[in-house]
Image (cartoon, rainbow, N blue to C red; front, side, top):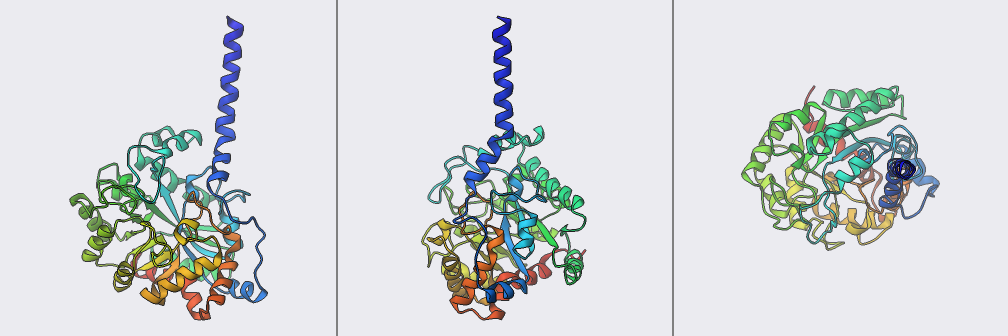
Length: 388
């Protein structure tokens, strides 16, 4: 009997070691594929021009995964070394706190949550296992801790003063990266509006009311009801504007987008999306909403992944950007990769020069490419971040 119990204990220990040690990396690799592994080819002209750009990307879910942001990996899409190699100057890092099983772009229900298993499997603190607010706080802590260990290579922005200081420093030290914290879905408030201030104090400066499913703030563009802002949602959005938090409408239902824009006093973003004109899916924006966001002064981050592009190449990204520019104008288009967002993209962060080359081939001018690749995002952040 004792021998059997000992064998069972050994088996359980080995299983636990395998689960906590190997399963997270396997899941990460499987969920964040690239169309082609590095190295990535681009013409000498495109590579040289790309190195002259300030590149800013509006959406990256790196913090969800069991990776040290400062270490280079051969899985997934990003880490600080790969972002720097890709000449990214500013990366928005988004916290995911809930994601239902069986998510899809037609109808995603709210009844399950795969992030709970991921939090347990990746040995996140126990406090994160039952609280979505704590999951957001933990991911913020992860980025701040990386910045503290980076010897200045990674800076987390909170204010316009931080941004200007970073830009001045990067003039002489090009291998620096600024991070900005965002939240994907304000179910992370755990239904308490006061938690908005808690998350703001943790460094979050961009927040999306909804994610893949309808929640207590309003409808998702891939949810069940797809309704507008609720009374609670309106209170939250007003408080976000008071604090200086940028409203992200990436996963919002059409009616939530309309409701937010009807009352907005500041520019918004759509951090990562496609457009229905080049890929007809509920996840993507129609031309009417593209125009409304442009009228608001906002920026639309065009995504890199296959299911919003109806394609899997840099040329497909450039094609979606061409339509977005045609409808919304050149001042309102940016990058919204969705790197590490459980999506398939053509390249990891080291391959961004391929997008620059695709934009050149699409016929964009050098000035237009500078705007798309980062200048439009910089303008928006200068207009919306707290002064400091």
